[in-house]
Length: 526
Image 1 (cartoon, rainbow, N blue to C red):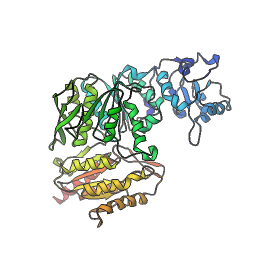
Image 2: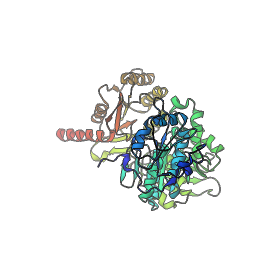
Image 3: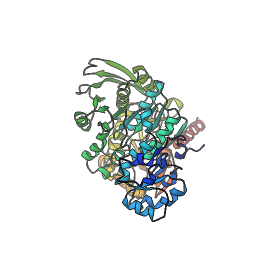
Image 4: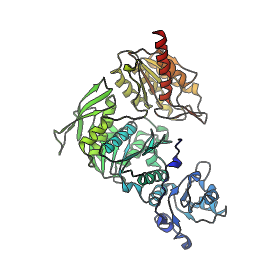
């Protein structure tokens, strides 16, 4: 069965009067409209359900109020928009209420929370932000909740999952009305906890405005999205809001970079700090010992308390993913969940079976008669360096890297990304990621220029100009049994975007197909 976001729809939304819905946002409302009953809200004209309010926001090219007559025909209860949108809606002769608010985008999330009867307030909820590690930390929180016996939904970059329904997410954090709709659906399906991944864009655009979480966490801040935020200080300011009293009373902050240290020092919530990289750090908790479990591709670590009331307390934890970076994410999730009452043993049991789509995802192991093949979302210089250094410890042979970088995104990270690849991997396979509207050859040329700064002779570098599938195939077929092939950049994405077209493509099944060819070749040769 093909699942779409239309399937995540609550069936029993309690009605709220239009007057009650907009009372904090509209300067005035026609008395004849006050008792109109509203059941839910939407910002997407093609997603509107009968009885919902349509929140019409002005876009770069088209104002959504242009679709007022369309949503009326679909049964919308009202249109909520700005002055320009109201004029546009009324010009279409719509008969449903048109209510004017100052900023419909800013109001969208709070309106949706009220329209869907505050679903987050009926569950345990946690939220995670950070440049890297958000998704892994979210999945770690999910398995910890589940180990404690709580049915748990997740909304993350990798996927949105509610019970048996799961789908690849279209963005890290949905627009407010869609987020509240999915949460309300989760409540109807008996979900007892929700884990929400929150991007800096979502915070700056108000997509979670008005929500209150039981706990939030900050993983790190690294070079990304400066095309939007311009400076790292602006980027931090956007993410820092999640760890403020606006959204929570309890936060866990990783201080393994200076940005985390700054945030922990200024945080106005009950803040617990943790360092996974420096056992001497001035933090509430530190990872004092860690060891790779090579056989199981896992990590064992000790979390040690350094401040009251946990001075000297030690917790032995295993996370079922390789590498120091996953220790960091697991430690953050553990402290976030145990800090709001999840039993210690349940949190540990969850982490011991953690698996994340497209995040250090093990496609094949060496004991399967193949090289070790890993699929990972790493797409920033820092994340790529971390995963490559991690997998060096698990690779007795050659470390192969298949990578590219996105088009129409932060171009300033391309050369640094390529330099990291050239320094930390052995064999490089340069290919396309999501070129979007940019020229793919030009993107690859920028990567190759960065590689050349580290490897002037361009040793062990192969530019694959045909397609990403071919690059993955070439890398796997070139690898020996002691080698590791890491495919980075896309993670669990189910598409490749080229010139505005989304082509079905997922690195993991492509790699699995190539591994069949690898085994068949070995069988023939044997």
